[in-house]
Every structure is written in structure tokens, then in C-alpha cells.
Image (tube, rainbow, N blue to C red; front, top):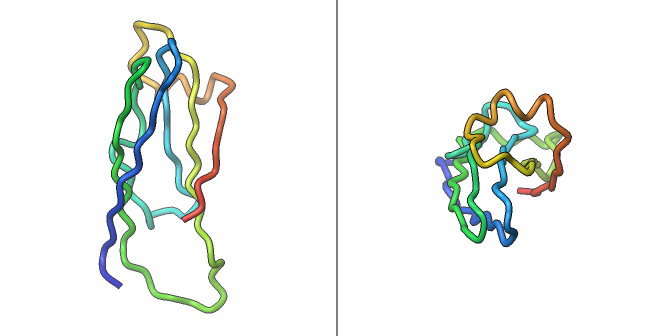
Length: 96
């Protein structure tokens, strides 16, 4: 297989700044750009998901999972690397 790229639009319909992070359950298979950032109220962001080539194995699970985590952020917050481990977050599973 060759490298595959898809786009995903994240939307913030609310009135508060959100911090988001996208995590793959399969290490080194997916690259997400940008993988974390701030999302302004009433705005959208398009992220790219790149799947690197991998050998097919019959014992591999048929579905991979990406986890999208988000938190309400303070207006001045832009660095979510430190914020995510310390904060309760919401999450959503995206099956690929």
C-alpha cells in the first residue's frame, strides 16, 4: 500500500475556546497535522490524517481508532501539551 491522506474538519459551534488533541491507538501508523491546537469559538479547522504504508496481516484488527480529546480552555491558553494530562477531557473515538 502507498501512503494515504485524508482531511477531517473539526468545528467549535460553542462560545468558548477549545483545546483539542488527536491520538492514534496504533503507534507510528498515523500522523495527524496539526495533532493539537486551540480552536476558536464559531470556527472550524481542517486537520490532515496521514496513514503510512503497513503490511497486511490476517491477525490485525479490522479497525484502527483515533481518539479526539478536547477541553474548554482559558482565553490565554495556547500550549495544550501541559494542559491535557492535568485536565479532565472529553473524548470521541474515530474508527478508521
